[in-house]
Image 1 (tube, rainbow, N blue to C red):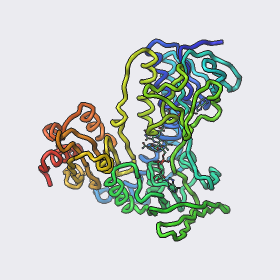
Image 2: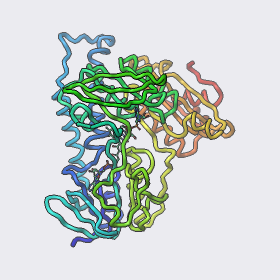
Image 3: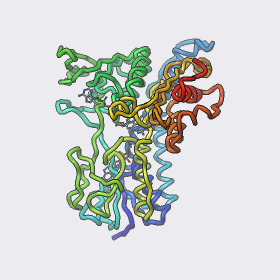
Length: 466
Ligand code: FAD
Ligand code: NAD
């Protein structure tokens, strides 16, 4: 029987990063993945394929809507080759997952293909083409998550679908009804709206992306409405039925009136659930909580001292970069180091256009916890850079402590905010004040100037260009 210092179950961004870090730290490392390709949700059916389709559909939208305004005439009709678009996405995924094979090889990590399940706290059975058992002094559970659904919905995966199927459709829907106005619903809803589908988003709460700052919800909804996406907020879905190729969704609005929606596809994007099916946690004595997440302490350790868990399968934001940080942290703890993650500084991004990005506390959270703060906001439309590119939607908002001026949160909507947010993560990591940012030179003309201006507004209400 092969023996390892550490075995990692699951090869998503949590698992494969943990494996690399363990190997770097000199541990004999195994990684177990039930699918034939490594990379987990993120690389196969999550972050990477969704961004590939967002980019392709964005190019198409630019060609049909924005090129003309830039003085570019396209003779003839611009056509979508949807099959090719999906094939390109698949090839981006293939290149990316092959990159993980390379990294496993390079770091001399043993890869096992098959379902990993605990026999006891130090033995894992792997069921693939053959069945074998390995011994691991330590294990890191990184089994991720799966799409959640509602009790009355039958996901047939053809017409009533999750993000996984929405990334590999064979036709462009005529009317896609999206249940859930969160990250997946809005990113994939925007893809299909751009490609010509009618898109209706039904959201249970009174705003989209309800966990982000309310100003971001409002601004993104305004921008997406301009693009033609229809929103139905404060609607409670009560039934979903498919007859032939039509799906009918029944919901009640806030006045308790019944509303029906009919589409050819229904995307269910109401969140994801921690995934531990088949792991046989009970054989190792590992406890999960009532939400199905593996319970961990601040050191990512389960109730069984040699078993750790990271990423979507444990509490906290279901984000690839959060999983990666935890992968590094678990490996370093196993090596006797004392790493630390500041969960307040894990940024959140929605890759619609305009992009939405956040770090730290929202205005709603600061109000709720009674923290006195100053807010500085600057609109993208006031930037020369935004006018040059035509991306004038959005703003940057910086929240700083009323007494010390320390930055407590940054929330933005606009072109390239997914990249801009990194400046605010750095600033907050080093506990910068709004004035620190306001006094730093930001290249002109850039979208980043909105950050400086918002910081000036937060410092002393002295933005320069508005
Ligand atoms: P996963 O990536 O889910 O990987 C878990 C792996 O474990 C899987 O490969 C699974 O097959 C394997 N596994 C499970 N059980 C076993 C077992 N018993 N034996 C062997 N293998 C097993 N996050 C972002 O930060 N940015 C984004 O842009 C983004 N976009 C997304 C878009 C979509 C459509 C979706 C669905 C998600 C997106 N996410 C994004 C979220 C991101 O994908 C997850 O947060 C991330 O993949 C979690 O990583 P993980 O390693 O915890 O788990
Ligand atoms: P989400 O939590 O972002 O959004 C779910 C939405 O569905 C919420 O707005 C919620 O209020 C709504 N909802 C819940 N029940 C409902 C009901 N019965 N009727 C109508 N609406 C209902 O979840 P998601 O969009 O499914 O994404 C899952 C996870 O994947 C997220 O946690 C996210 O972190 C991750 N993800 C991240 C990215 C990114 O980082 N860009 C992209 C995609 C997914």
